[in-house]
Amino acid sequence: MTQFRNKVTILSFILAALIVLRHSLGIGIYNMPSWLYILESFVAQGTDIVVPVFFALSGFLFFTNLNWKEYPRKLKTRVKSLFVPYIIWNLIGLLSVLVICQIPQLAGKINTVAPSLELGTLLKNTFWYTEYNITWFIKDLMIFILVSPVFKLLSFNRLLAGVFLVLVLLAGYYFKNSILLYASSFFLGAYACMYFDQYCRNLYSKNLVYVAGVLLLASIIVQTYMELPQGASIIWLRLLQIPLVWIVADTLRKDSEPSWWLKTSFLIYVCHHIILEPIEKCLLYAFGNNTVGAIIDILFAPTITILIIIFISNLLKKYTPRLYAIINGGRS
Image 1 (tube, rainbow, N blue to C red):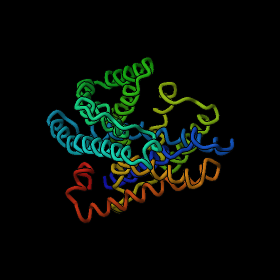
Image 2 (image 1 turned 90 degrees about the vertical axis):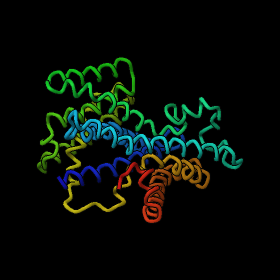
Image 3 (image 1 turned 90 degrees about the horizontal axis):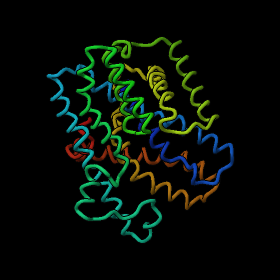
């Protein structure tokens, strides 16, 4: 159990770091040679699997030991770990945009415009159509959790649960609807928890890990070479990559407790955009729109961003632990 929990913790940190890396890519921004474009395309294809894996992992964890008596308690914990920080970070993101747009030296240089201060717009930006759109993941995850009783009702029969999963996938593919597509990842994790729980928690053989690693790498290379588009057209491949990532992540199993900074994945996700974009702008102006600038951007922008978040987290955890707990959703 300890190894499984530590594996989830370390994997979550790596996934959050890869999201920062994905958002630092300079494709479409920098003038770069073909070899660098291919490299960044490879990184883009590889990191685009992160969100489906996050949703699948969330589905697995939510359905762990889930029964009807436990459902209200789990909803209550998700209010603390998801809804409260969702509102807080939407407001922080909105405030950051408002501040930036009031500074002449920065206004117009950041890819955003001042949002309306009308009450209706403020409410939308706080609860739904958020100005700080990085929190869309949390919003979708809360929707999936609210819908999860439907899957639970069908879970008495493996076939019916599987049909539900396939129907969600087909609906997302047909309507090109991102929420439904990501829902298929969430319920894939739920399905794995309901029917393959022990297998998912067991230690895998080294040979299986190696094979999964080769297949995962090969699939990313094929995506890059064929320049496959994102979205519904490759959702089938994404769903196949999720278990490959999970098996490869078996190398992260540890008996000892992970360092505290490896538990900052949630904060890295929710606040990296506020820090990353100004850093990228500074690097762009300092080194120019060229190959060197693109390389420095992808190497240093995500690294600096993550280090700053860890540093701030350490200060908050040390001096304002209650505030840290609230904005981090109660995560230690």
